[in-house]
Length: 131
Image (tube, rainbow, N blue to C red; front, side):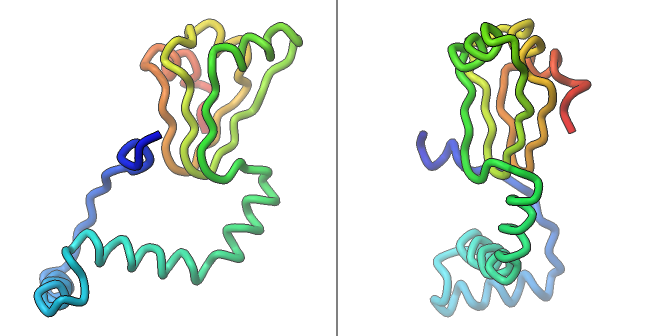
């Protein structure tokens, strides 16, 4: 998966004084651009709470990172007469060739802290199961 596929665009409103300070640091060469400053600031803040994140991931039994569900995965789950709960901190994706009825038959719930990618039909089929 390409790095661009692992990122999400967000919009952040920043006060004009804070923005000016960021621009000054960029101009002075501390950062190559505003985006680099924001990414580093986010990583630094997340690092201060890393233990809390790890404890919560373990407590809630979340998959940390990227988890992709293929049509074959879901067909095997259906053949076993089982269902799954998708619980991911990061990126959860369902392959584009997964029919909505297969997703509905095999996925009991979806809880994603990050990004959830699936076809519009699958998202609609699971709408009442997405936390």
